[in-house]
Amino acid sequence: MKKSGKWIRKTVALALTTGLMAGLLSGCGGNSGGSSASGGAAEDKVTITNVSYDPTRELYAEYNELFKKHYKEETGRDIEVVQSHGGSGSQARSVIEGNDADVVTLALAHDITSIEQAGLIQSGWLQEFEGNSSPYTSTIVFLVRSGNEKGIKDWDDLTKDGVGVITPDPKSSGGACWNFLAAWYYAKEKYAGDENQMKDFVAKIYNNVLVMDSGARGATTTFVENGQGDVLVAWENEALLTLEQYPGEYELVTPSVSILAEPSVAIVDENADKNGTQEVSKEYLEYLYTDEAQRVIGKNYYRPSNQTILQEFKDTFDLSVKLCSIDDFGGWDKAYEDFFADNAIFDEIYARD
Image 1 (cartoon, rainbow, N blue to C red):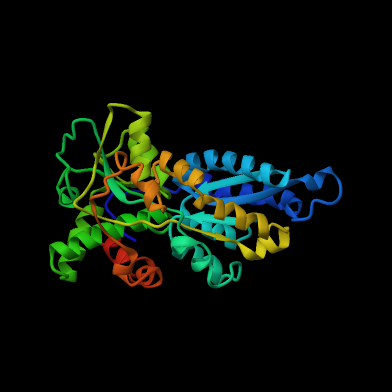
Image 2: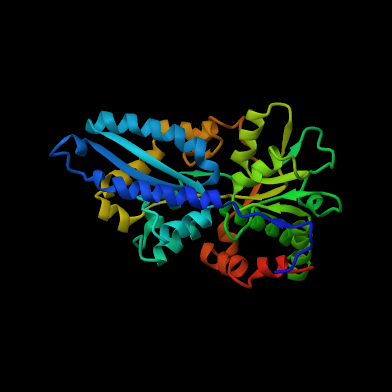
């Protein structure tokens, strides 16, 4: 693909390496997860691997401790949860290629569907847990530097000359796919469905992209730590975490239209059956829906799927923003085919000079 010199597509190999290392680790310890506790002390400890996407590091660091306590109280057994993080698409590919995940907690359903199509997850996984197997949701916002020098308020402002945009790569990042679809839906409303104008509009945004990292956390690092760009198109949870970690240095801007992002979870049945961890893997994902876990989710800036608990965080989240959903694009299978498959709309826009 051709692009001007100002466009840098940065691949972060560390994310893949982390995923592969987690696969090796879980491969060494996977058989300790059998549901039977009879036998020696080695069988008293269960090990499972959770392959997740970039921005969930803090969430699962806290949730895993909560679940360990719960599991110990319920079973008398210790559990170790091995974590792996990276761009959601890259993480899905790592599982397909051998990363021994017992569960996946990825940024979008399509990434889990790709693992299903590889024969590792049973069909019907989307209905296995509540809310389309999405124990939490998020949305897409803008993060700008304090003072908002470029006056960024909505998607239109990202098309202006001289505005440097940071967003990750939809080919490897689930968050980047949500970013693209939110921008596309805004353009659809703006231009009453005129696809040529919609493509031109979104192309202007991507012509302003300075760096396209492989994952959402890498994009945050590029914007926050490396000081590049004027605006980061980000997961809401990433933006809120940045505000907490860098008080007074950044501002969150909620666009007039965004998207209901539904990160999905699933048991990797082939691995869990082999490792003897099917039962504990199911409990690990089901426990995300408990009130205690839902409050941990909200504390880590994800929107709890429990609507009553979500209201406890009404001062944290803008619950009035207009949100489209993946259903407006015909579901993830159609959306991926239309926008992110080879030679689809994103590639068409990306290839423009």
